[in-house]
Image 1 (tube, rainbow, N blue to C red):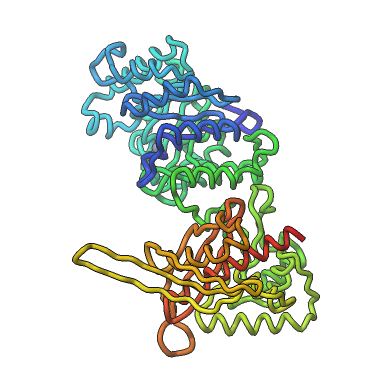
Image 2 (image 1 turned 90 degrees about the vertical axis):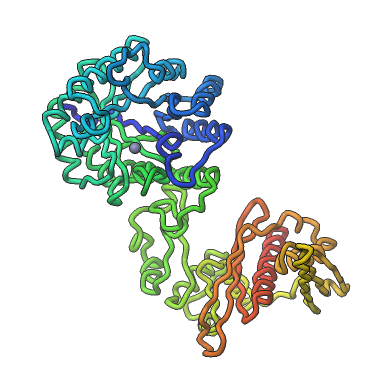
Length: 530
Ligand SMILES: [Zn+2]
């Protein structure tokens, strides 16, 4: 049996293979190369790059990988044991695994007798021969061979003897690692722990764990197996994968390093965890999950007044780890539950020192209440909140004044023609500016006209663009008609900020959010210059 605790633990990433089986996850060839490079730099020891036998795109990727210089990671090609009743040399899929020329080959094979008989439609004996021949063949060609025992836990529960026989054959044939897979994701942590421990007591080969998240237990199951002595953990970044996903390596890494005292990354890399998570989401074109443990935007967001009050006294009173350890930040949210502490802490974040007894705090709280009654929400519109704070505490002269704006839509369905036009009249530094712009919709036209009007005075405004735009219908507490809340996220390439506008009319609500966005950017720019 292994003395797991002291041995090195290996991270095995399958974002590029199992991860791409997730709904709506697609990577181009260049995406895959960027991901492989990033995972290597981050310190992941094994990168499963694809299944060369499953499609030509994966095979082509292995050709490109040969030219990719990696610091430390080993590339693995994934494939299955040979076909039933076919010589291993004659199996075209096995041949492609060799041609991929990766130092590691991860072979999956059956270990659940029900699957052998009903899915493969072959015999128990033939399946064992398939495992034996395939591993021996790849070992004889100098590959490091990882054997993924598919459906191992279900197989063990149904027929322990046969499942262990498969492991025994893999070990005898020279597998370097034997990975126990909870392929259907249905096992419970204590089952995983007990079964892993039993396998380890009968096996000298290092054991790995591969779990799926169908019971929302993939991370827990992986950690339990590691605690029992497994030395390799397979998963994907952000838990991408088929159905409800694979084991999320992001959470596994954070738990191992911060809670279990297991070093799996090079020194200093843990701080890049959030960045890695966002990088992969960005390439996959997936909106980051705000509630993702450790790395999500909300993972250290505090809203309740008593929590925030306690945080002021002791930072770790409502946090399980220091957010900086994984590259995340603490956020104080402003909303209905806010108390004076939220305002003080939030102001501090914005560089404003507020004493506990400052009378402005009550004025700010009253203003928030009044705006929230209209349908405003500042939790995710931090830039609008910063403006409100600044304006209440230290009023500054406006950057520009609106004289009027006008939006028109011309629709000619017969000609399949639609044009939106916006005019904006502003006064800036005593000058009157008048601009007209067209756009795909009224908000787009308005945004363009506003930015054109400001371009003469602030040419860098061309770098500012809308990143996201959301519209919600809200019940305002005023009792009359419902209101529309518009939320926009803007970026200047260096930072992102969010603003909000509320009105009974969508164009006005959009205008208010746009106005705040531009004003916030101008304010930040002025602060940077002074
Ligand atoms: Zn899997």
